[in-house]
Amino acid sequence: MKISYNWLKQFINIDLKSEDAAEVLTDLGLEVEGVEKFESLKGGLEGVVIGHVLTCLQHSNADKLKVTTVDIGLGDPIQIVCGASNVAVGQKVPVATIGTKLYDKEGISFEIKKGKIRGEESHGMICAEDELGLSDSHDGIMVLDSSLQPGTPAAEVFKIETDEVFEIGLTPNRSDAMSHWGVARDLRAGLIQKDGKQHELITPSINKFKVDKRTLKFEIQN
Image 1: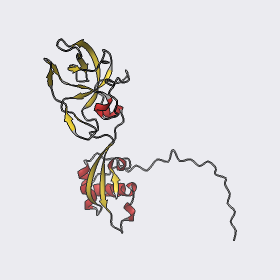
Image 2: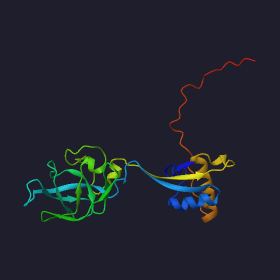
Image 3: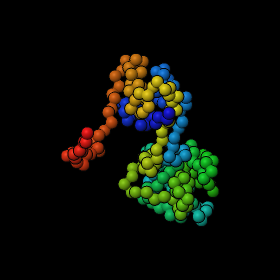
């Protein structure tokens, strides 16, 4: 049986590493046979942040390159050499910082490194849609909403989902744990036994549940 850790944490207020939660569940008899990482986009855009282009000058040694300074929310702006024709001062753009791994169509990764392009240092990459894996478009860099704050993780802006999925080897006698709610209850009990803490159990919301008519009558015939 597969259990989403994100979903599980909607029912129990915890901040545990997945391996710690898996250990508690296994000790309770809900054996976690494996934990699989899920990403709605490979790499999860980890290391990609929103940048604000502060300056944009022609590269002194390349007609098709621009030398930009970009605020990525760290205080001091960074210098990035960019080859996109549409880059301009004032834009909010996605920036892959040094150490970020991006993935091509085949899922092969390449790492963003500090480099020197035609004599000018470059400390990241301003990205187009295809470079982030969001589409096949390469019509220049992405220009984002001007209200975004520098340093905001791009995963939040593009609503990239990441999760960890537990594969639980459920035995026939544990039908009580055949749901996220049942597993959450067991996990809470296990944590009380382990550390004595009363973790809050959050009942599912029924705010969106609506009964259109409460006066329906059913005729019963003997």
